[in-house]
Image (tube, rainbow, N blue to C red; front, side):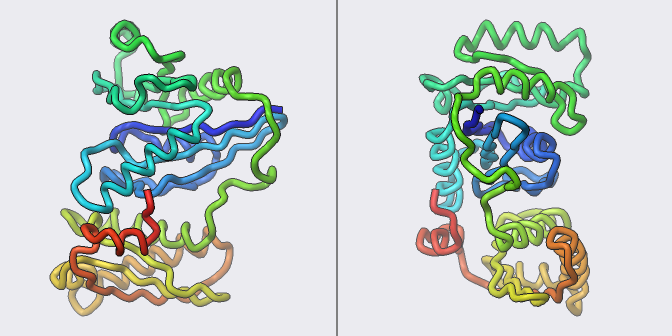
Length: 284
């Protein structure tokens, strides 16, 4: 038997969450076109036959400015400590690697070049050769398309070759170790990212205050009174539409009908307040 932790890192919007979801065949991480959608490290478990791979999806690599940012950056570092293998993902337009995170690592390091469906085949080999010449520490360089699934069979086969021998960490029917409340909050946060622009998604946090039988109460936290007005919309039409869409997705996830009660609260500058960030579960 083989088992181990694979940590997925990379800059925002390179496809880390899409990759993990595709490998698992299930939606564990939320995905939106906006950068920094992933805030916590999200654990996904793939168990097949004689192997179990525990994937850790992490926030995108960026320079932190707030306490929330710093907690997100710390979660990347913690995930790297747990890793038996590291996937460093880049898209087909990137040419530089964040050396500080990966230099000197003592576990196998794979470079995954994503979105190869958007690059000419004649340009792919020179790109791989250029990167392998500049960065000597990658054990494997694997071109993939996380969205379309190209190269993922080869990725899994190569990963298994490096995966340590050992017993499974989780029961075979587990897809994640995170509670239902986490996924319910993430579904609502995904809808906010998809339906609101500018700074609104980044200034919000979602808390599941109560989850009992068919009743779920969610609180959306914002930083300013003006943001609360934008979230709610004229005569409450905007939030009703978003809540309806979220309810349908939550029902699909839970497999039962629910009543979703959504409230919006202002908590001034919560992202800059360490005690609030920690209370919301962002520990880093």
